[in-house]
Amino acid sequence: MTKDELNNLIGKEGVMVIDRPTRKTPGMSINIVIKDVRISFGRTDLLVVPVSGTGERWTNLNKITLK
Image 1: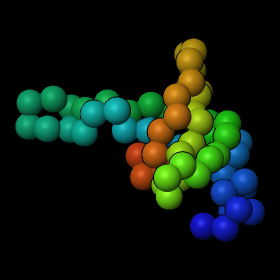
Image 2: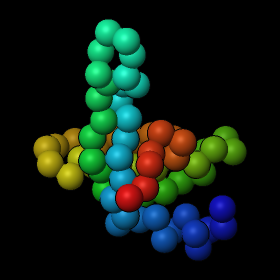
Image 3: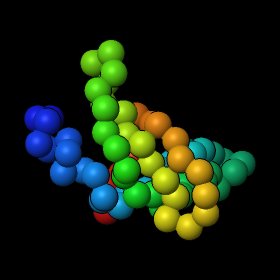
Image 4: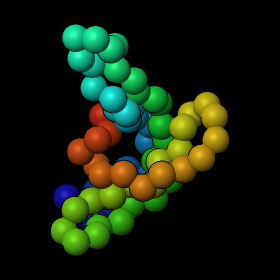
């Protein structure tokens, strides 16, 4: 992704999977908003906050599904 494409991610909503579903558990995911983007050691990280609730976390772009 180009720098402009990464900057366009800021403010977008998505879904972050916390636990994938298994045979025994339904899994868990949360709705998030992207607040910042960085490239660290060749991977793209996003600073995300929940749509409802508190906190923030840096996570890999691969863990986010954009809406």
